[in-house]
Image 1 (spheres, rainbow, N blue to C red):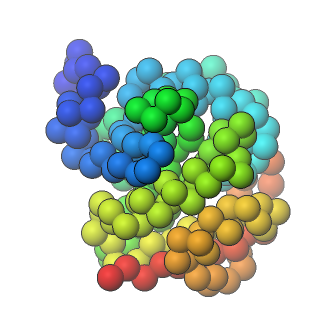
Image 2: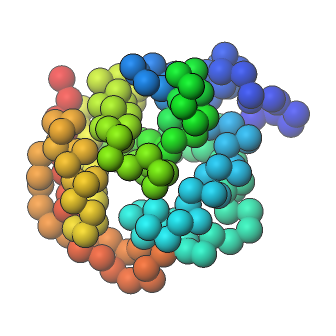
Image 3: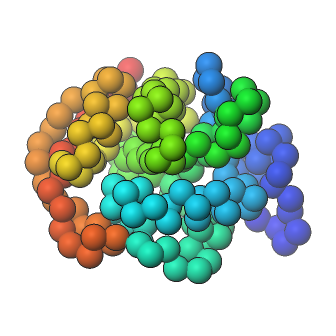
Length: 189
């Protein structure tokens, strides 16, 4: 990305990032932009959000959300991150995020989190379903993993056609420990 490039316009985001904008009934999934960093920091400062992920630390260090946005905007990134933006539909500009990380062999790993104030609204299911249907990486297989103490996220995956693959465990930065997980798989097309 060139110095001074503004990413506040969706058309510029699409061209610069080669990442599609995906519309749903209640929001738009769009590439992150620098102005999202404040709301990302606000939501992920909640211990419950951080502990539901592998990589978000708690407490959130200064500059962490800005660094996350910068990585998401890098031309050399392996992960595409979409803001769940409800502003077009009179909702919050940032409700959460959904991401796809490229893996070997036409496979991707899906991840997501929703701001705690928007839990139990169906936003996560709608966002994940939209990314699955769009399949922007043209993946033949999608994987996802949730901590076993988060059955709500497991329901999101099964509601979107993912099937249980097995138990494992992953490191959680916020918890500073290994946490039991459920792994899910979605065969595409």
